[in-house]
Amino acid sequence: MLKKLGLSTAALIAAIGIAYAGGAFQGFPVVGNDGTICLSTGNNGVCNQLQPLGPSRLTGAETVPADTNITNNSTPNTVNIPMPALGAGPHQYAAPLTGATLTLTNLQRRLILEPAGTIAALTVVFPAVGSGSSLLVDNQLMGICTTQIVTALTVTAGAGTTVLNAPTALLVPVATGGASCVEWVYRLSNTTWYRVQ
Image (cartoon, rainbow, N blue to C red):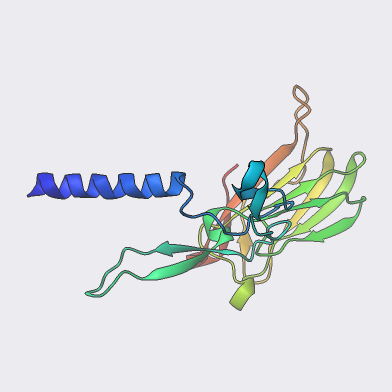
């Protein structure tokens, strides 16, 4: 019995993989599509069906459907997971001047600073707890990266939150010249951002 169940499960997984590889899920709009993705061709290789255009970029307000796998004596529940809960979301690029204040939103994943040179002072304000579509979610990630030195950095917690172990300056690695980054994860139960990098 278990052997048959195992073989049936393996066959189902294989069928889904084949359907996906075979294009059974074609036709959905693609983010960033420039209108040149061809789904099928006709006579002499001429495209007769283009992939629908999607938005040019992600905003962070998108959701991904998922099954909770909780049955409660009924069918499994399908939920929409917000992008920040998956550790995803758009990056904000900024070229601030000394003395600037940048405020992050709940939908952003990372702030990337690319100023023309060293910044003597910069303030970054994290998002507030929020409600509705501006709500922070459990395990959300937020990062700050810089391509230039920030001599005096002030990280301010958004209303109703706490930011732990915020750096007071950002340096750029001398050996690589790559950006210097710090990152936090948000814990909803105590509204705290924990530094993880």
